[in-house]
Length: 269
Image (cartoon, rainbow, N blue to C red; front, side, top):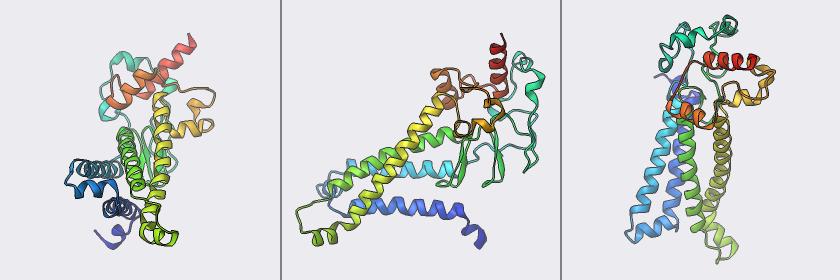
């Protein structure tokens, strides 16, 4: 790995996230928080559980950040691996007009339905949701469920850390002396509060979109997407239970073109 690769944005962002995660954890253990008090009393269950949750969130972060989000390959004639060999009756239900896939103006590949070219990654991504600068990767068809799992675990860690930081802030000293002893912990508390707010909003918005089978890109820019331009809702919405089953488990998964054709046929009838 050359110097340029070591200084790439992805490496810098992931290194920064890792250092910040363990730095905040260290601050919580070094100050007079509940964790340090429990550790001093020999009660190691909660400190160990907290460290395991931090480690789990970090591993999920790296997995989401490093995995293929669902890049469109050069062979578009076959569907993605989890959708191979659709039933003949499903394929026959797709009217010829719905199979006109647009060609990407950047990488010159034909784009399947719901895909979009990411200028940061310089690739087309299936079921494109958004490009996340914090993970320096796209969120797409393959890593979106894991991204939600990461947000959920991260939120638990942040809220627990927020509680621990507050438990170590004691306000019985004079201001200057208090700030000298608790300034770093107070800054950690403010940082955890900010991150908790952001992650809560992110998780809530993504759960709402998943429940209605829409992506962030589709929700923000329906006027720029041909299959949403004249529609008030998503043509792929099959109800809460089926949307969640498809998203998290791949249950009942068929190509998006099939679902779109079924919706168009239903409206025509």
